[in-house]
Image (tube, rainbow over all chains, first blue to last red; front, side, top):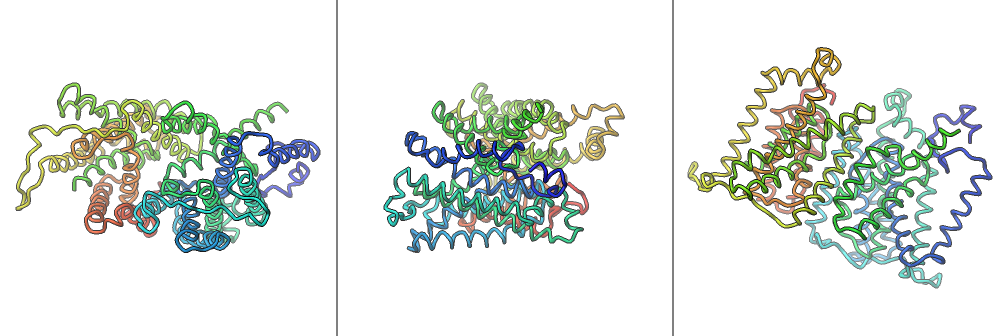
Length: 334
Length: 281
């Protein structure tokens, strides 16, 4: 990795790495193989409670990864990504519960619909930038939130229940058991990560980073910047929708709350906690966030108070994120 | 009309902070809540609505001043990507305030009684209209006029406008711009707190009252054009009316009429309906 950087070949590539610091192939294997084995074997050596926590972490991680594509790579900070989380959940709820479609039809249809909606919304939102972008995405998500509360068809503010988990009886297991569901979520998350990894390492990904770094320059180089932004917006929305589908399957339930702007804020917070441009960083952020949230809910009911304080502290002191801070420490030592 | 004016009171404060000083302050709703609750405490102690109206905004003023002077200003000076960081920080403050209020006062709904003078109704063009609502409208208009005068016609206003346009130059003239900005931030927050107390007799006070209204306020400020006091006055009329009419005639659309308005405006006139073309915010 370091030789590539030295030859300058990789300069415009997004700084997407497996690990925050350059290490040899062997060191990477030593670090990553036990991690992978541990993740795969997790349900067999920890309690059921820990397994459900891990499921929550992964779902939140997928959500945060979607936001990271838009915020971290393209440089567009949105406070409305929860709308796609909610649309994902509502999509399969409508497909399976109201229209009676099987899951393997509803899920792809949902994703296609979300992509289409996101492309339309993105076409409007990406005309603005910075603060205005943040506000207009917020307005869109509030609109969907309002619609979800009002619509009788989807049960209004009560939300919809009875969302099925995938039928895995072919494999002889039931997704209703926590361990099986864990593997299902793990597989989907890994797929989503792989997809994102391919995206950000493709020329398309480089262009997104170019837009983040210097939009005018990309424009004068002849790239149709607007289309790339819309593409990034739609892809990010799809990843968020995947998280929404998993979330609704996890709880068998979807409600307008999944579209609230607090949810969007939580997603952005996870990305900030994570920090540096490393492929699984949103997952680190998600893990920290979910664990802190769990710990807080054990000691206090005043979740909002601590959520707010936590949020402020992270923004004020950990802007580089946890991994960013760690990386800086390591690099300063060298 | 009354909703318009309440939103306007919030929006002028935000126009000062967001429009002029360019700080995306999502915590504006928090100051609204603080003002309302501090007013409630004063009203319960003294039984006087007027004292509550006078003292209630002091807490948001102090907190706003401290926040700008000791937190936001230093962060901005450390060269962070100011807008977004400050937006996210104040987003946290918004929820922390809602949580803190809930911790102290519980999640019950409260209200401050309107003073006796303003309790009656009055016949206006053949329609009975509650006096208190007229009071709200009058207060809104009075504050609008006063602010326009202060900002356009006084030395303080001129200094503020100059500070926004060219910070270094104003500093070089020997003016402590940080203190001035913190004062203005505090004043904007105080206006939000004032709106909180004013709204208390007609709307209820509850812990997350500020979270919903802050989005509406932003709609007003953006629709009106950033930093444009007159614009936000007209915009608050438009937004308030949109919301009221939607509630009356199309209840299904109640929750999103206002957002639809924002989206339409931003799609066709990103600088706001009344914003001057070319002002780069």
